[in-house]
Image 1: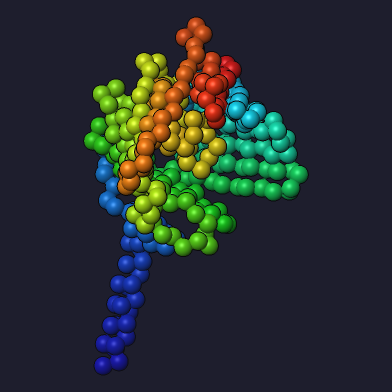
Image 2: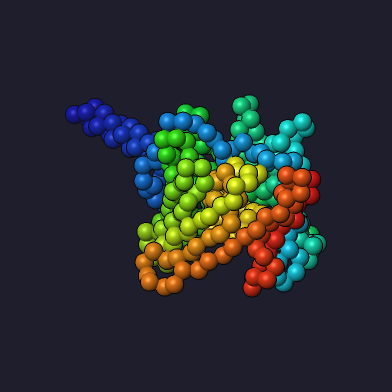
Length: 300
């Protein structure tokens, strides 16, 4: 009788361990608070546009200007004889105490393995250290996960059959915060593989439910594929374009229409221009007359 009880207890322990293993091995569950992510769709065609770490041209620097002064500077270093990024150095001319160095690491197949971001402030003796791990399944990117002593950032990718990104499920928060659900960003493409529109939804807050519609020029978008994650400093036109079109689309964004999904407020519009010299992009952004304009100037 005692032997039967012992065997029963052992079987319960083994079942419990098996269930724990299933949870720990699932890439579709938030490890901190067990937020369930809807089923992620796999692509029939693997493109991996987001994980090549490349720029269409070997840009040496970007200089950012805004309506109220000089913005961030971006300096790019490439792996020798390639257009794959080795590291990016970000500085603020208005505040020389701080510098961010973003170091890229690659797998043997030249896809991104991880990205290390180190933001150092020598005046305040402050360091923000983040390591973003790129996780693959059957050869395509399934998730990008970052966690450090105080933060967690998770991004899961679902695909269309042709290899384009259908949606991204994101969860960014402090480890001390209760996880109240993910933000879902969904994309619709036109025939040129430009993001025609994208929506953002958060199950527990309608304030996040917005729709963005885009128009494009016919020039090649040199930033296609240059994507790290939403929380990075990114040289885009703002969160709307940085959330996808700036890095997913084949051509350059010329306008954005912004509207809420759940109310009847009037939509807002923003317009952008690009300038080229000898078929190279030299500057882009809002027109200078726009109320909150910003432009980027490109050095090669």
